[in-house]
Image (cartoon, rainbow, N blue to C red; front, side, top):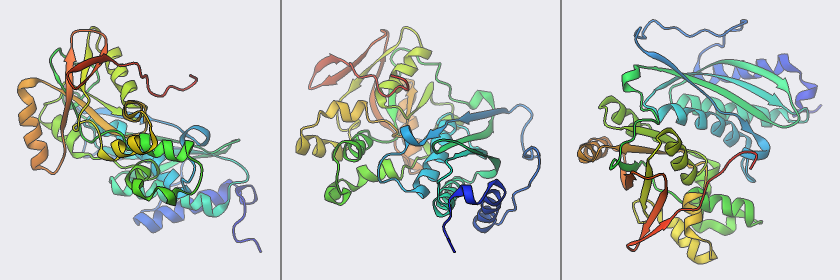
Length: 338
């Protein structure tokens, strides 16, 4: 008897049953079967906006070598939560549609669903349902939602010249991690000096407190989640704020030390690791100069981080400042179909 059959030998009904059993085991809550999914609004204020995000994970573009199925499930949920959190919105519910290849094994399927449930649990998000279909490759399409007063949402648009650009974590780790996983074939155990970089790709995580505090105190003029590389995030902010650009200080506030070490050891351009890494899930904020010290003090008092990395300038361009030398940035980050 085969204890680990492919999903084509199980069928949709059994797969849904596995999901129900895993959710009940992990959360103690029974998944309600119906034509639609339901979420109580009893505790919500009438003036709050419904805020949603749907970000698809596709195996050929989003799953690097050495990522296991539990990690795949975790990442698929996390990358959606991050886009809500950076807006200052607490994610509350999630619906996940799955496209499964016929040869996917039952154990891998269960590991993947376990990863999705565990990520939802960590961030106190209700996994309330979804859909299953057959596809040529693995596709996970979550839709996450939350509620927030529109006056507290941190939009992309709102930047002003001379605003301070800040981040809640340093860049470079995913640049190193992807370089190792995609370009340097072999046993990742040979890169034991770069465990944090590998973990940043295979087991990504995010911090909530910075965005929530800045939102509650109305201290940020804009925000964006960096998932396609820092360069792409800066360009996206510029697209929402015409006649604005950035001057970035290329220093220790921006750069994680592990990427500096990797750059020197393997002769890899440090700027590429920092600006083109991708999938960092680091949150960028712009803050009025007169509010920055207050914002940093509040965040640090609550166990968070806020690093000043640059300024908004009245020019549609991006420059790096390194050893008092100003250089135009020519990196563009990741873009699908390009």
